[in-house]
Image 1: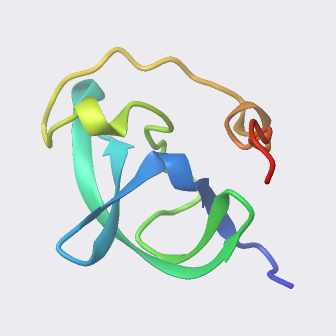
Image 2: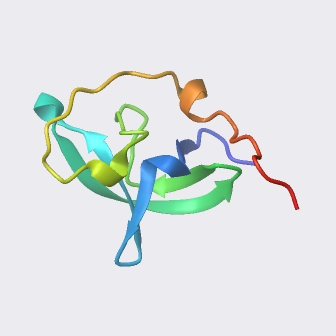
Amino acid sequence: MYENAIVVPQEATYEQQGNIMLFKLGDDNKVVNTIVKVKASVDNLYVLESGVSSTDKIVATGVGKLRDGMVITPQEVAFEEVTKPITTMFKN
């Protein structure tokens, strides 16, 4: 059980040189590369230990197309929308 935990969708992260990273939305809508420390993985979410605060805005989708310092046109999406469980397409 985690109390007051910060969680992010795994889809919002990527791995680089062994670090789990994501993009925060910075000043003037520039994205900022940020290393996060993952405490646990629950379904399609990461429970974070550090790297993001509750007031930060993060890029939830499309991170593979971004580079540090790029200017984007963000669209705010409800947390519940980006954390919906992924439906199983194939079963063994």
